[in-house]
Length: 209
Image (cartoon, rainbow, N blue to C red; front, side, top):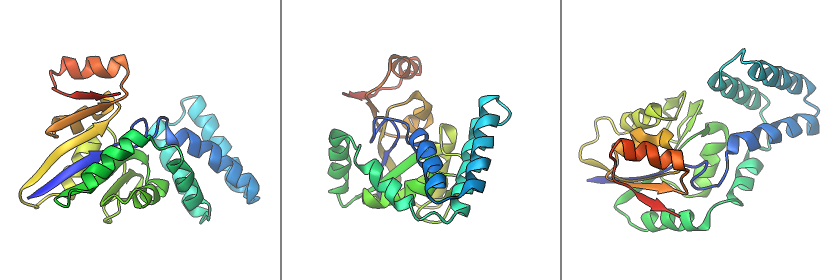
């Protein structure tokens, strides 16, 4: 039997949205590397997003495409910088499950795989699933939030017998589908709206504060 523990990243293992941090980092990287063509395209993307000419999903995907085309050597540095902000108590929870040889630990995040895969490696997760790229075991992923996050997990274990999603850690009501497929639900440092959303679904959960 395969037992699976799933950890969200933004707002769970770290207390903020890593993609916003990534946007700032990417623009500084364009300047530092004198990649003014990429900087101009990035600014146009920000302009289009500000005036709702493109969706948030398209914005993230196109920005990641720009980043990957640069063949940027700073991706590893960015991922390592995120590790500095880890919540020690949630990291301890991850290490607890990793100490159990029967458990597969998965980092599943809406953050782009451009940097999420390296984060997963640094955290020593057995598998990492990020957005807009390949997962650590070479599944091509588009979006990885809400229903998509739950569906991507199912696809990764399609055809595998006796899989139990024993626990999920997340800070957000966006991960309701993930909670619904997991035996133990851990709501991490939640907001009031997140608590209300789970209560409305009559989902039994534990709050981690």
